[in-house]
Image 1 (cartoon, rainbow over the protein chains, first blue to last red):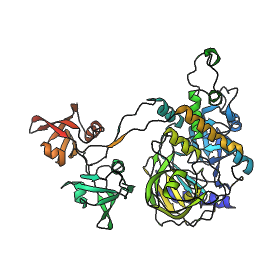
Image 2: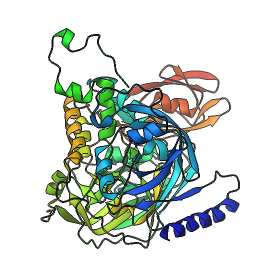
Image 3: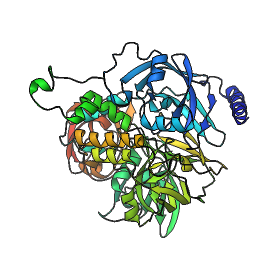
Image 4: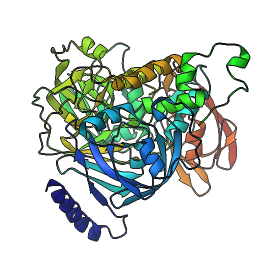
Length: 275
Length: 307
């Protein structure tokens, strides 16, 4: 019953969304099940085989399927299985297709292994065959709604980096040498100097100087203001202030919050092109 | 998946075969196991009642991806922080590292739960009287010991927080959207008694072995970029100086000058200037070549502090 309601909700959502965005990619809404452990599960098909019940996990940098699914869906075709491996671990392969509801993703990297935590949940709550993680969901703008028990996906053109490749590069490149200094570059010119004494724990940084004629000046920022947020990001250290400014492009009007004389106030700054 | 393997590895070299190699294989396979160990999927004991409340408007929550491809946000606890948390639908509740709770003076009850009076996620998500586990998940400990995230991780935000919001993730944007729902999520139920079956500890063991094998990655030193005070505009014939403040004004650069070279490198757009100045820090001098009224001139500007 609940499931039917969720499906209905999904259809309604689609019905509303499509006339408004004629050219936008189609949104696909799929229901999920919430286990009593509060893990979300969805039904997937792998290379057209299935459906299989898997856990949907935003904390998983990889997608994992067990050996049973791998065998049935032909993922082990070109793989030489090791003679012995812990939890049946085989390695990484590419699934030609991975489907959730009407959503079909091509060429999804999958790790094959009988994950012990999944097996444990599976024993208590019925069959669960793996975990869907970042390599799949990062390809979509994804909305999770626990109340409606639905997830909605719209392709966003993002091509997620391969987690294993990224780890490999990170761990192998450069070895254990001290990495080069990182410089945090603001993307636009604000025209102010911020300061904070080492060890000072109060929120924010102090604006030490505002250059006359600059974007900060035009917005009404003043020396002595305590800058608390910049475009919705906390600025509790000089580096954090620069990191926040690294996200703001020239000409974008963004909100900053400052504390001045005991009162918090919000100002809008439009930083200029420059450095 | 197999990494480079010396011919006749093991016996031929006359060394005893270490247990870790049997379990976790050579380097390539170790990365596989690291990938697996980084899957944050947890089980928990039943939750205590929690009376968390939320605010009423959609929030835009900044996030970044860690080196291990986890979604990380920042949060302040009782006004202290910010601390770094992973967004994880595979976690049944909020987990806050034991060491941090000790520092903040938040005591666990007999079952390991603590109450966080004010838990604020960057971007304006505020929860009050929020219950969470005072516990350091092994994935977090492993990532911190290996320096994988690039920053210290302090916890995991799971179901009991996430379920209160309709959350939109889009990795082509730098903020998530969190819309409060009129929904009080029922607490998670534990599957097993304390500790759970031994298989659950297996990934923790693998993580510990990997930490020993792979070691800790040194963290880079971070510095803010230096300030030149150059306002720039892209024109058809190159980069124009639009305004000068601070160091650029002091050096004698004038609005209307055309910037042609930055430290000897030709520049055609303001993007070129940003690229060439990407590693510039305060106190370092750069040579700028400009044309003014048809003549070519060179200036040296010492970068100051500012943005």
